[in-house]
Length: 423
Image (cartoon, rainbow, N blue to C red; front, side, top):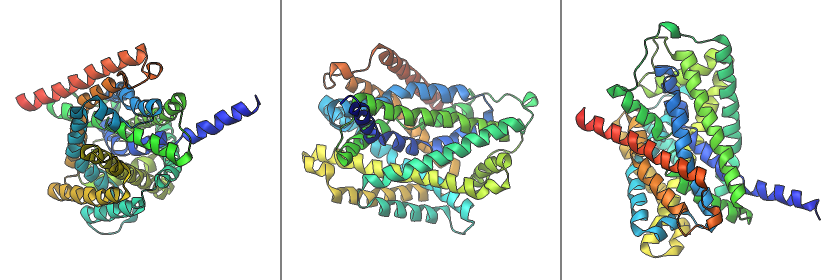
């Protein structure tokens, strides 16, 4: 009997794993491939503190998603509704206000990587429309296991290639002369705007805590196993810590290969994608081009796919709550309808902004950062409320980290707002 217990615990752990890797797949996209690499290329190691601190201070608010789901058997959206109708209303407004820009930015980056990888003609808008259509077709059946089964290898391959490239670049030494490079002040007008954009999706928007809670419940429904709190948190930590390590890796890669070289990243999307892939080939060799191009595209496509699954899920759930019809929260027809509406509106946003690649990215990430303090506060209120059993609520260390995170996120949001008003 005792020999069976470790086996049973291992089986339960394996059944619980999955949502954390989905979170990692959603995270390792724009925030890592684009923003962290730009930070290293433009500022060297000058913004390493921002990457480390925002990963630290966002941690509790994102961890509260799987914590709440495992402790209560409900999603955070149900928790917001029980906490206050206004709480869910705030999340609804923020989701509608950001999801089209987010989806447009992801589609644009993925489209430009596809153009760079294949060398085929076509405008980024046309490629973005095709990729969004393909993603919607894959998800049309509402199958969680399509996501769960696909992301594991994608994340593992890109992570391995990135870490190898960073080590190779470190062995070769910086491409530029760091000692003679003038220090770039992040507290300038442009610097503050970029820091906010960098931290907006680093490692992922706080909205994703609610996505994670839905994925946790969907994984439990798929496997027939309800995860324990410890297993749900372990699954989250594996994905989250991995994304944090890779964020630092991308920043180091940009710094080692491009900082102080007088070769800034292009604002043109296709040219940017080629420069991004070139970071790897400069350190690993020309042979790596098809491998890295394929990995980068696949990573971005997995992010596009994962986020396109998340937005219809949360919107469907909230529509069901507001309408007083719980059956809508799992209605496949509503999910499919949203799979058509959200990409269509995102393409309109993309069409409106045209080919301004970095403008599109910075807009989406900045919107996410400015909503972060309020969503963080809602998550903290939720997991410290009576809805969560006392033994599942965060301990003193997590509470103090949450309060410090609220101060950090609010302070930078106010700095940015003040700069926009007074600048």
